[in-house]
Length: 81
Image 1 (cartoon, helix red, strand yellow):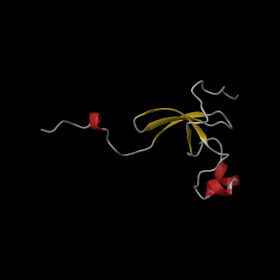
Image 2 (cartoon, helix red, strand yellow):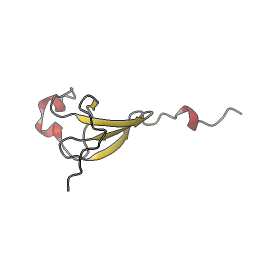
Image 3 (cartoon, helix red, strand yellow):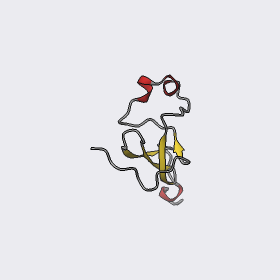
C-alpha cells in the first residue's frame, strides 16, 4: 500500500540519498556513479540537527537517516569533571 505524499513534500527541498525500498543504483548509471540524478531524488521533509526525514516520491516510503553517524551531539556529551 502506497502512502500519500507528506504535506511537507516540496520538490524544491530535495536530497540525493538511496531509498531503502527502491534500488535505483541497479537501473540508473548516474545513481550507480553516486552523482545527483535528476530523476531519483527524495523529498527532504524535515530535519532534527543531523537527522533528516525523507520520503521517496517513487514508492512514497518514509524514513529517517543520521547524516553524521558516530558523532556525539553537543547536548549528549558528558559534562567535564
